[in-house]
Length: 489
Picture 1 (cartoon, rainbow, N blue to C red):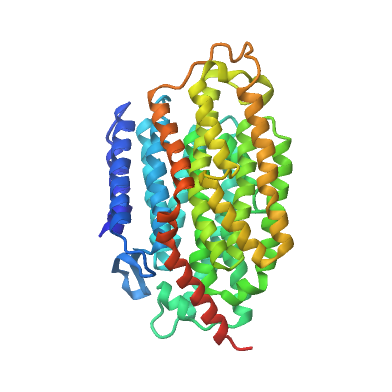
Picture 2 (picture 1 turned 180 degrees about the horizontal axis):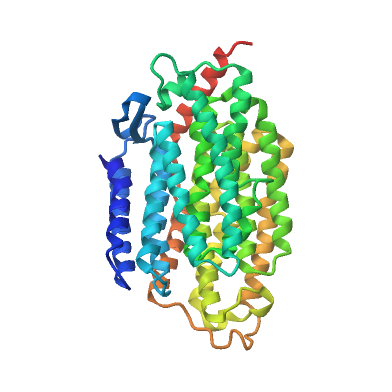
């Protein structure tokens, strides 16, 4: 019941918000998001760190078609549920200083999206997974299209086209697998895992799923929707996209592709790895040229996700464990970075690096929070970004030495352009744009101090998070090895 509660509580809250007007909407949304976090924390505290699926629920939904409402969490799912439950209250709290037209709809969409995201991370039925996948996408379309920037309509249309095409590829793959299940067809994930698919079947299914997941992450060359969407969406929407939603694609690869079509993954993993590495280098080069803070972080995110994807396709324990911990760390750090950019923009009305400078003299607390989160982003030891990137690079290096070398560029290049951004924004002398800048206030401190604490705590003591996912990751790789071993030569 805990998993069902995690899905349906945000839905109930979203429906309730329809009847609440004005400033009360943000407070109600925040309270419900805190309750959701409490339930997720309880699940984490009572979770037994083994490979089993826990907090499960399996009920007939459309029995005649073999569709069940089957949900549950193993260590892989739980980490992403925790990330979602942790970030949504911070994202909502970060909006308290803003006033939105039709605020009840704005916060209802955030909570509706949270329900969809939890559904994606806990679905054990392919049809339910697809429904939750689409349900998580619908709110962000409206958030970006209604409350976004001047180019929001064109950008949202591009985003919509990309994601709907990718989803259709995945739907074709799911239906094909459904038709392969023996006897009474089913969408159950275990029935899919039990299928003995030929190498040719697995290869075309690889591309059906990979395109959908690669667009969502995104990795090169499926990334072109991302920088514009991140820039034009309101900050809360950008946080949802970068902090949580892109993890849907990575999770899809781990949960569905690796154990379901291991031969297809083995045949095409070098291609996927190559695209991921290209994305790391490409994103870093483009980030160097950016003059807008938001676009710079958007390209930085592509580089980090490229490394996570490379770790997943390395198909070893270090790569997968690194991907799990780095998904959490990236989500926390990127939300912090976009919030800092929002604070700067709200006071200066610009995100252009050349227009800023000297903010450290006016806002020392903000400057300290900024540098801590930035150091986590560039993977300084004893910050949350270090352990994930260390494991990822280890995993990629085991897969291919040269891929490991080029993947390591994400740390070097990232440190250069991120520190340069900090220098241009925070250091130097104040100017006419920044001379009246003021330090962060109460709600801003709560958000940033929480993120800073997470950066430090996870960096110093990541073991509890690694323990949660360790057994599930090892079990998944065992399934992959066993399935490869029995494949006809």
